[in-house]
View 1: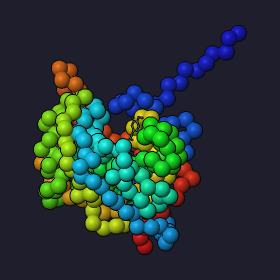
View 2: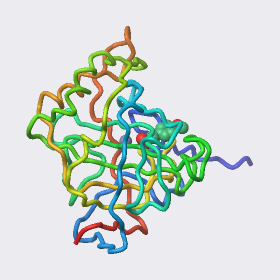
View 3: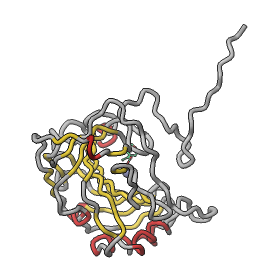
View 4: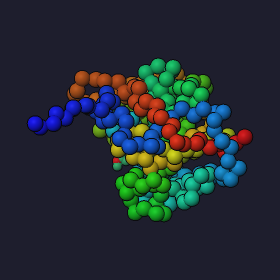
Length: 261
Ligand SMILES: COc1ccc(/C(C)=C/C(=O)O)cc1
Ligand SMILES: [Zn+2]
């Protein structure tokens, strides 16, 4: 008799209709960073960041977040050092945030959520010819994560916030041709680093994560500006773009290293 195949649907994430867990995944992101379990690595170098503000191109609402995308055809905006063996080119940055200030970040520190998290996505253009190919390789990407906490207004972020109404709907783009993302980094050099993955499809295990220890401060109006964006296209029933973060993933056989004692 034909064997009956139990049709067990893997849990699907409401946002992307894609599996929450990657079969065979051993290095998925995000994770909780347990401060006392992180291991100080004295051989970690300082992270060197050099961005050329004129490589900024545009802001795009891709229906999941808003991406600020950069011209990555040359090595004008790069990071090097830290845990990285090569230099990596800046491709885009984006954020994850909640409907309210109690949650929104993807990573947590000692199980604490921040209201939002910035991801600066870089790729290994030394070893791979295109971003798309780097996305598929274990050392293909390096993402700097910066936590956002509620506090003083962030003047550098405000120029970005002022442009958001122009990309309210999914698949809208606005030219944004001068911006220096280093203004969004905390001055403290301390970071954690671990081997992980993308947190949206294709969820590939290609990311060296560099999570800054110190958050930056933004004010309530700036977080509210994120929350007035829409997941939906113009003309569709409006769905506010909020809670666009992936659930925490198991640490499995990984150690989080710290650049500080
Ligand atoms: C090739 O298609 C891609 C889609 C998304 C991404 C990223 C950078 C996802 C994430 O930020 O988690 C990369 C490639
Ligand atoms: Zn992200």
